[in-house]
Length: 82
Image 1 (cartoon, helix red, strand yellow):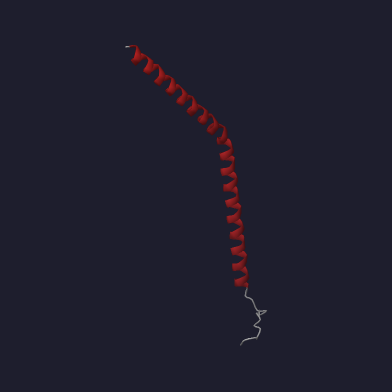
Image 2 (cartoon, rainbow, N blue to C red):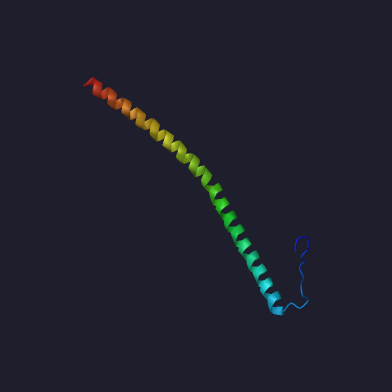
């Protein structure tokens, strides 16, 4: 069969059950895609809402580090003065 071209043939007799099954599968796929899109949108809104909180947390961590360093310096001075 080298060089022979095979072609698809589709019968004109397609049962109603096949059409209903294909329509149901397409509807289910569209519903799933819609729900997935809604979940992605919700996660994006949550992430955007948490961005300021993350920034404040980073600032607080930096302040805590600076406070810890100051405390270490004060303790070191107290130890030297004994």
